Length: 280
Image (cartoon, rainbow, N blue to C red):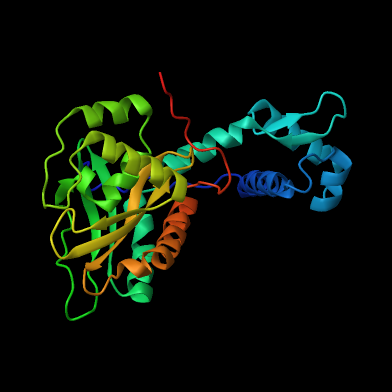
């Protein structure tokens, strides 16, 4: 019989009871971590044992192991336990892998269905925005999808939102270079653009009125990651004849709400400090 024909050795679980015990310990450790909450950030061994329905000795053994791994911390004064910084590190790794494009799809689809215009997601690439999603309106007259195409950041509502998230030195460097016009409405003066960026920081959204393409308007709001950084922008774009300027404030509230939904999916919590903009 050749080597190729030799039967492969069968791997036998020699101690299924021990494996079952290990699995049970892992499950119990997970339940222990989930017992903590914002209302009860610190718990003692007795309370944990009561909540989990297991012996104090078991809880003490698990807590000691989790303490060694940095997943729990112990209050030196009370002896009670709380969640450790190691969990934050693990959570940060998960958040960093979240794909903003994938997370945006259902949110943009909902925005398009509810508001009736093109729903877009843009990110910054040097001096341009790249539309990584552009879901076309279902209206007979609508904007052509430009997914994957680039547009000058200073001419688009999404780009203005992304500029509003820049640090001061970055923005100064951006404004120091020429701002070419795409239409007669494009802002090409650095001081004027800087003022628009300051306004976006105050009101939380940007508008575009035939500044990138004649006949089109857009309302956009910034998307923030877990650290509060502006990483993308959500935009609602449509024909000038349908997107009326008088409706901008009401529509902006809804666009902001959709952008906030996406920010929450990326780990951002409303009300937390945003990315610090260095001025020197």
